[in-house]
Length: 170
Image 1 (cartoon, rainbow, N blue to C red):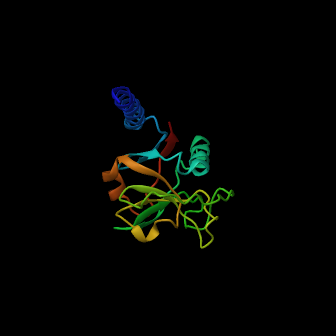
Image 2 (cartoon, helix red, strand yellow; image 1 turned 90 degrees about the horizontal axis):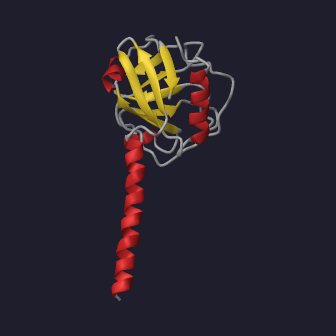
């Protein structure tokens, strides 16, 4: 009986250590991060590559090609969202590549990054939004792909027409 209890304690300790190591890796910034430079400061967000792998890959690809550099936040609704990523600047444009939705268990909280889309769930392209408050009515209807971890004060200062001066992923 003592051997079984000892084995149980050792197994539990190893499992706990592994789970804790994963949490520590996330805390240390092992997840990809997106940086959005604005006139108000840099917005830093953790990207959820496990929950939305194709979306994170596409956002990373666009950022690496400087697609977002100089684009505006064309739609800013206080308490709701700041939306950008449209080269036409009016909410009708994109990069030309549609993404299949990757709805996930993540919630729309203040600072959440998610993909904008039309009424077609698989119509997301390059436009994304950052929540300016909790938006539970959007949960499970839009692909959430990140969360602001630093620079939320910059997000809250955004106005329609403000530019993303530089966007990159590390």
